[in-house]
Image 1: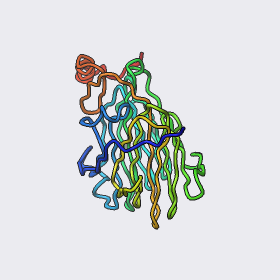
Image 2: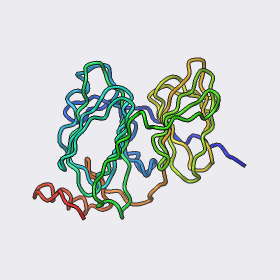
Image 3: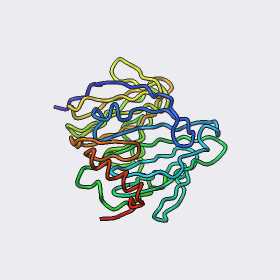
Image 4: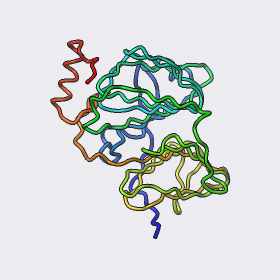
Amino acid sequence: MNTTRKIAATFKTKDTIEGAGVRLRRGFSNTEAAQFDPFLLFDDFSSTVPEHYQAGFPWHPHRGMETVTYILDGAVRHKDSLGNEGVIESGAVQWMTAGSVIIHEEMPEGVHGIRGFQLWVNLPKKDKMTDPKYTDLKGKILPEVTLAPLAHARVISKNPLYMDITLEANGEVAVPVAEGHTVFAYVIEGALGVGETRYASGTILLFERTGESVAFHAGTFGARLLLIGGAPLNEPIAWRGPIVMNTDEELREAFRDLQEGTFIRTR
């Protein structure tokens, strides 16, 4: 018998400033990371005010985790210490596995506003020092699927799960999810209904880990959400800034590498 998950907790995004002065809305971070395992952080950096985002995120290191950047509108130019560079454009996704080493910068561009999100995904201990890599997905190649008569989605990833779901007016949908996986939704637009309760944009819904599906419905104006899920790692987290390891000694080693100029390495 298919069981629908209940909501375990809700979170409203909070205004914060990151990088060289980017104003964004944070859904969760280190304080809540245990609840969202394997996910570490979720930011919404959408803005119609260029001064809120154009300062960008200048050169900074990463180790032990992945970043997933999804751009709905606008563009982000990126480059790194390995010589990679490019532009993440409207409708595209960049999945960056930092592994053992990345020093990079991410610079939002344009004067007509931007809509985008960044998710941090923890790497298991066995993969934290893997070689870095990028997966770039252009918007035109992201598969679009019909979930229900008034519900459709862009599928960014199946494992872990990452979907951009649109519910038309009065639409409803039940999406299968893996038993035991962490699953959360972020309301982008409209009022999203779960059971008898409606949730406004800027809300994160964290679901219980038992149950085989999550169900949503929309009112007369429809709704749009991100649905994200993955298997918990159940490993210790040692986290400081953009570096996420398993022990304090591994953190100290990472920052020694930065100070001594030996951070850039492969296995």
